[in-house]
Length: 276
Image (cartoon, rainbow, N blue to C red; front, side, top):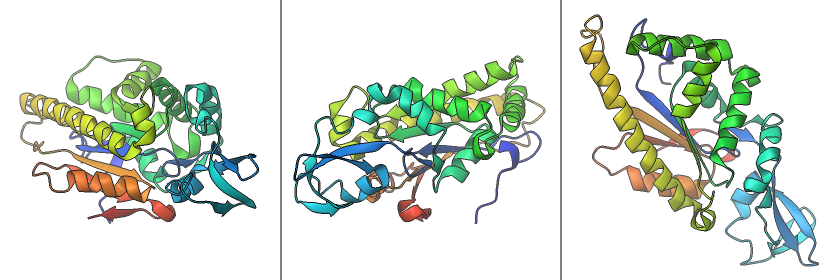
């Protein structure tokens, strides 16, 4: 088991170079949103995201039984609830969601003030994802702590020599630093091939984090009071997803890169495990 980083710092003055990337559905949380498929009688049937991860490669290719129906394909506009038309419902449903297998890491990331990315096959406006997470923070959703986050953000600003902000300004600035990648937002290729779209989003996040870590290392070096305590190094990014296909493609893309800083974690079946 890895050593837990307390309050986002290795000690009183040195920040941890650990970052996170998360799939949303059935990874961070279990949402009530349904994909709409159709049965042999043309009736629409709602399918959970968890069940969809199991059946998505069969829909429209072979018939199968699902909750008393024989599913023959997708309904018209089957992902209607996962696009911008469902933005309002997403924010509402997020507050009703149950914890997924990566929620502990998600809560840790926020409470520590760590930078993260949400990489999801959904097609909502990115600001909708940010709004839902803001609601989590200000409502202390399931152990996400506004006070803990603010305390750590103030430590980071002291470390970087940045000016003070109000608590709400700190939270909004922090959320703006994170990245939100609903990969099918305005991109039909993302909807039809979410595995590759997620890899592209992760590539962007890796470049972003490497740049951010370089700036942090430079600031640490220039600050005389901690120059001998903070040892610059490469950041580490953990990516988690419940869909085995997404994990397979992501892991294959990154594992043989000589400068790879990404570790992939599968949460399929509700159990988190690192994929080598």
